[in-house]
Image (cartoon, rainbow, N blue to C red):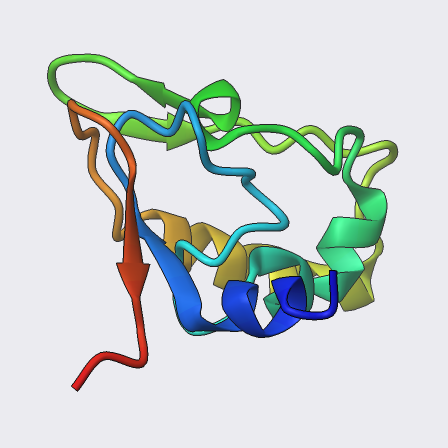
Length: 106
């Protein structure tokens, strides 16, 4: 079991349909998991185990993100929410499976 943490640090995901990626806990949007990048917003999340496919809403022309929070944000949480939204806006709807990527390859 001690090998799981180093393994997870070496793996990131390439987003496909989002069926197999945990939105908050898996490393798919940057160098760190979203729970680490946006801890204030993560604490407010209704479902900390939600998959990307359950948060991402897409149609033929656009992608939107429905991050469910337990309560309204306070002023000091707004910046992290804006930063999260800006990061998510970089991702477009993809088809196909999510892929693991080994980050430490030569």
